[in-house]
Length: 452
Image (tube, rainbow, N blue to C red; front, side):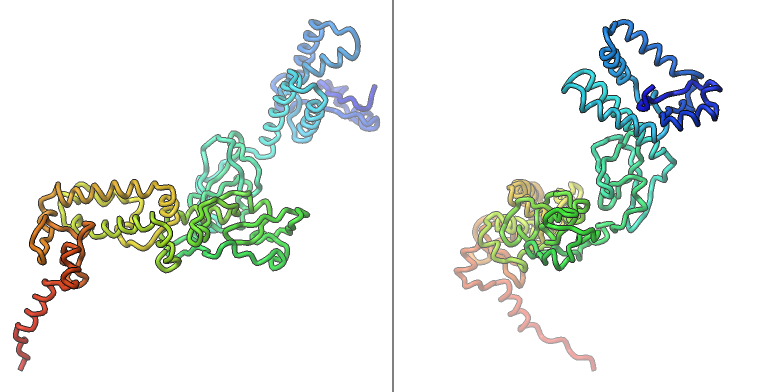
């Protein structure tokens, strides 16, 4: 008998006796224990019987052929038949890996062995992570983790960077920042939820890749403090284009995102590599209107025509807003809700979100906003008699159609909000007759008598 052989006993008392086990141990023979949970008193006999039938059908001519046939048929047996504890599964997995390398490429035997290897690994993972009753909601470091029911295997744990096997593993997703992890990794998390940093007062880093140098970081990851190096020893240092700092491969997965500083200063929208925390922060900040272009980079309007167009449309919408909030038909039609995903457009005309700038660059925002502008103007000027009645006549020429402050050929008095033809207003040296009447009336009216 060879010492490399592995024996599996059949639960016979003389085979399980202490003396037998001691003799096998001294001879350095490996013993495959009996499947403890098997309902069959001797299930291995079924396997031997199947192997015997297969061998008899193929009629091997020599020992080598017999060995190949046995190995081929053995590889077809599911991993759950072979072993039930972790150590035995690990041994079977290593044997499968060895066979895969030795077998001919793309052969049926190799494919069957790969299938068996998958079964064994799933079984091993199941034994390592037994299914437990997990709570549906966990709160940790301001994360609100919700238990997932999806069985998808395309997710990756943000903590251990390994695949989440949804079929056999319990996993959670933070409802705030979408941080995903295994249930076993929850207690190992040391990164607070990014959403806690995101508010209307939050600001972007507006310096382009503000690098401080790896030496200033003490050659450690800026987040988890793992030692890193540009040479990849002990771990590769990866730079985040948003923060300018260096991170390890666990905290930086080479995800890409549009960098706000590059958009503001260079009108550049090419995605750059960022760390995981920056990626989540930028994703949450994307729709938030926190960029005041007029203060950050006012010269941008001189070089980007699309920005000038969008600014004019937004100014017009703000001039239309008073008509809608006093119009019953407009309120019933909920016209202003057409901008529900960009609510800041009906509140001001100088705040932009990063998503606004991305959509301006692609031309998507110009098309949608022009369509909404046309719908609003049509309601005020054509469809609604009540809104039409709030129009203006040019008091300078007293000719032409009814004017509205959002018309392109009009000018509006900054003091009394009266509307005139633009040419008439500037030909009259921007003097407003309505303001003149109000001033004259103010001088003519006698002052109120003082109380005596």
